[in-house]
Length: 384
Image 1 (spheres, rainbow, N blue to C red):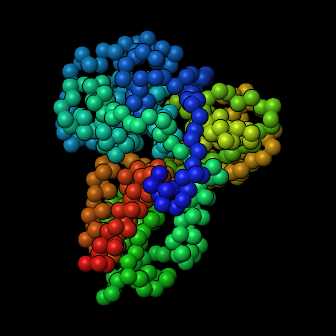
Image 2: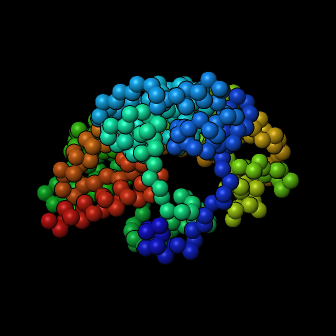
Image 3: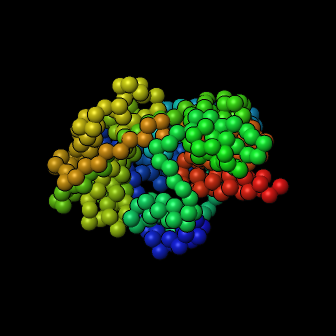
């Protein structure tokens, strides 16, 4: 919000509607349960239609079972939640929610990086996972958590380009940095007083290999998922279900991992009847995954899954396919230690900083925060 205000774009922000997503589990739609934190149950009430009676009883009984936690430990959410609540809760409730964020299941998502509030509550001596979850919830301000730009994020990008008055070079690659007596030498562009690197982690590893080997090694160890997004503009008579979207449980016979009912989620898009299908998961073979398939194959798979979930099998008015190759960093166990190594190594170098979605969150606000920190760092370096 602060960045939008600085750029004079607050008037361009729109709020989502009040509809909630559904979960596709056991080949049917279920309302998103209330009483959960990042998909992890706070109580069994509300999970009646999603979980079996045995799973619900395990959730209810969790506070009564012995619990041991070593402060500082980092484990996968699948291991933590599976041990306390059972695999069914992981596959049907937690995986669907976090897969939509990170593009992978919770076996590869560490508790410290993904839910730091929960890790702090566990370190603080919580006697059960249920107690830790309740302590981790911090009430926020009333109203929607998210906002978007009326005409898309191109609005933000264009405003940043205009405000910065920067020279923008597209499709130019930097492969290495070299320290000079006055600043930095980029192998493609020449001399600079300071450099902020905002590439994905795997590219950072190559660029800083000579000047920050510890950061390079840590960055190279951060794995990424790829995704394909297929957006359909459906005919006006195609009735989209009354949800903001659908999240897919683990083990379902679908290629898609999530559906966003854009015209339900964002009221200003209601007239366009837009639906977006997300495909691709961490661990897919990059040569044979759905993301690597030709557009017509990706579209056919998306249409097939959309029909299975919604019953909509109408020819779309328009289709757009977009790919994010190695674009979703995986916040695996140990991620916070890797990030600490990267930042400490880079911070020792005057006039060099990093920012991006692999550091402290994959969402836009988190990325903006890392950019602000990077700018503050290099300005301080240059002034000192």
